[in-house]
Image 1 (cartoon, helix red, strand yellow):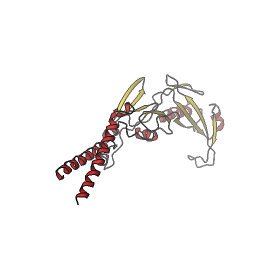
Image 2 (cartoon, one colour):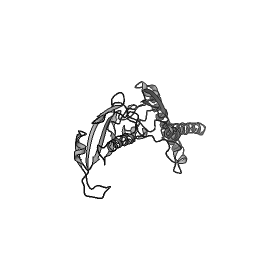
Image 3 (cartoon, helix red, strand yellow):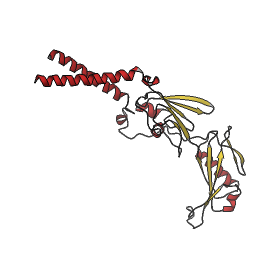
Image 4 (cartoon, helix red, strand yellow):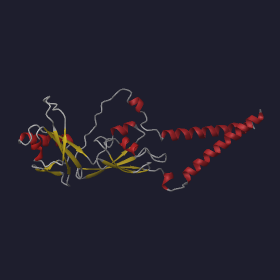
Length: 271
């Protein structure tokens, strides 16, 4: 009996260990990151968002002179506090206007007319408009700020909450977007997440292996851009509902459990 029990027990243990090792290896994100980033490393590949067609921009102009701002036909006037530059109690007023970027990358700005902003960062847009207002004598103390209001990405495939999400701010990583979508389901492939991007009139595709920290952090798609599409592929067992892969895995796990129970019972009875 011992000759029968020992091989069965060995097989059961090996099967359990193999299943555990394979599943962990395929589920853990950013493997090796604790070693690779044990010491702080400089972030070299961070790119600011660039304005693209169909973006909605919010451009605010602050000044101490309300009358100078009125000529720009602003939508909203917001009262401010003390003037930080002069230390006086003069109230700053900000006007906020909203613009949609056309297919050629242009906006129609009051007084200035057509301004090309496509491919520029928000900081560059702000500096350009601010310099024109000051240098051309429209608003001598103008302070301009620009924000992209329509930063959205779409997450599809084998995640808990697929759909299109709109985000605040101008910095979003693929890890944050997947987290916002509820993370990947257990049945999803983690080694070939696809990011589809339209940029400068071209469509590009990037594959990211979430299991490999080097692949994730060095990918051009680690920092997302407006209108990116993320697709998470389901594994083969999920392509056809009720497929045999998970069925056999479930049956195998059950059989292993039964064998271990039987062996334990036999050993106990022999005692």
